[in-house]
Amino acid sequence: MSGRLRRITPAEVSVRSRHAHAFLDAAELILLLGDDAGIEAVPNLIGSLAVLSGIAAADAICGEARGERAGENHLDAVDLLRRSVEPGSTAPAQLKRLLTAKSTTQYSGQLIGRAKALELLTAARRLVECLERR
Image 1 (cartoon, one colour):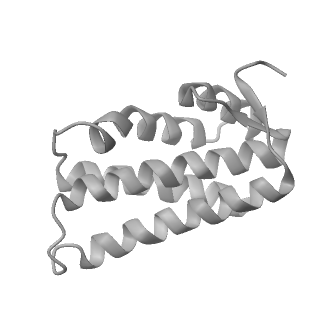
Image 2: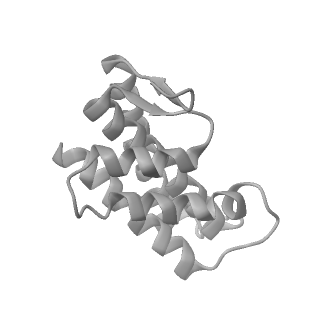
C-alpha cells in the first residue's frame, strides 16, 4: 500500500458513509432554511458541506472497494476513486470538482454565489448516489 493511502476498516467505511449522508442532509437543510434562519454566507456553507460530503462518500466508496482511502492529500482520492468505481463513472470528476472548491468554500474570505453552491451540492449528491448504488 502506498504511503499516501490509509487502510480503512469496514466499521470506518460505515462511519464515513454516515458522514457523507449527514453532511449532504445538512447542506440540503441550509439550502431550504438558511436565509430564513439568518445564516450568513449561505452559499459558502452549502459548498463547504458539499465538499465534506463528497470526501466522506469517496472514502466510503474506496474503502468498500479496496479497503483503503486517500491520506492527507485529497487529490490522491480522485485517482483512488477512479480505480474503485466502474469505468465511465462520473464520480472521480465530481470529487475533483468539489476538491477544487475546498479552499474557496472553507478557508478563504471569498464568497461563492448561489449557482456555484448548487453546482457543488449536485456533485455531492451524485457521489452519495454512487455510494448508495454500491
